Length: 418
Image: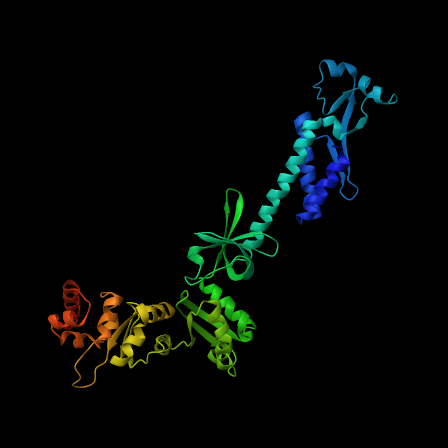
């Protein structure tokens, strides 16, 4: 392969890979200097001139002309730096001792093996550079939302491709549980993190991150994108429920109303994207008690006691508000606690002379859901309504086994023991 073809083929390959001219020139010179070092031992007295547009390559070797006697004996003769007068005059008869001889080295002089190695090295260096550029580009995009096409669905992850054909990974752990993908469809997600694995960049995407929900709000709500409304904090149980605290920098703009949109038009598109994730948008305030009350929505709070040192909050509600405050599977109280940064405990506030009772849903962490559903099927939805019946009656009216009934009675009875 001659120098023109080598330079031209590399230039075309580099341009296809979007490598800029200065970087391309640097790679070329580095590879050719490596060739020189392999053949001559060092590259100190060599100049390399490259014209990528024309495919021209010139390699010049500069040496000092020394006396023939020096070349043989006492002088520290280095063939890469010196040439004897006799050898110099074989090139041109007029040379004298002390002059500098410049000699062009042709690519063919390096031998076919070195040239082929250089070509492979050039291509590999561009591929390595391309990986570095891809890694850096996506590292700068961490937290940004992009759209990509599904091209392979695996058991533990979904592989996506961006507009430039780069592979992106959406692991199962970063997918919403209700997500169902089809090959060829477009999926939105955020760049979660970028790693180098075996010298290859691995781009991890996410649809479960709170940042993904934040980007969706920026996309759907102009006031958020423009900075009129700030998203103070987001907490999520992906695909199930989320709470978003928002604040307006303009008194004329209602942050909650703007985020929800006319008849819920803005929030509905976000909910659909998140597979019907229930989203509570809350007006942020520096008043901690008011903020906690809003965070516990849709439950209505009667009173609050805050333990700043212990990082705990006692919330008192009427009995009919307790199940709403806790939420399905305890989601509402968990999200509210994470939103305000305090551990929230729920207490029932009883009316005077009212006998305390507890909704069965509040025992969901001790009694399995199917057992509670079976009790509700026969009209029992509170602890005392269950305890009012005998174990034999429960066994007759439900499909529950005696061992399960014993366990339910133990749990419910413990609630009322002093």
